[in-house]
Image (cartoon, rainbow, N blue to C red; front, side, top):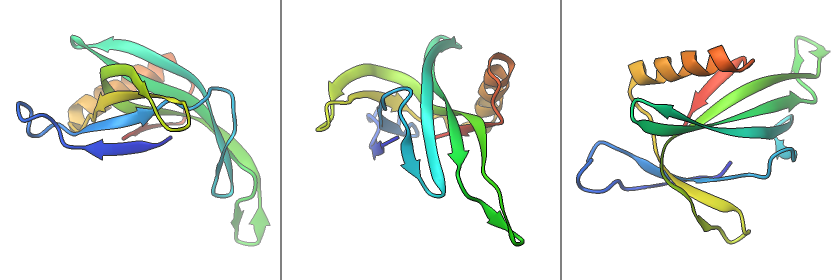
Length: 128
């Protein structure tokens, strides 16, 4: 996932907007000690706005600790934020880009985390 921060409009000085690049679903993305694979994007209404979250699998091909190396995998949810502009442009690689507003309020994050965990079998919910 590529995220690029930019300043929010003057009317919402505390809001942080960012660009979220939609990665191809079902394709491995190399990462440290393994890879991750975004599997689905979900848009859901939330208090009069719409949020985006991505469900995927992270695979650790080798994790070594105390002389033992063990592969493993788990499912995650990643929340880029509130959708401001849905896939409004394409990046230089031809991937769609959406403009998002970061969710920074702790109470709101906990509410969204609970909502996602009720709907999805994930071990972790991350916010950008």
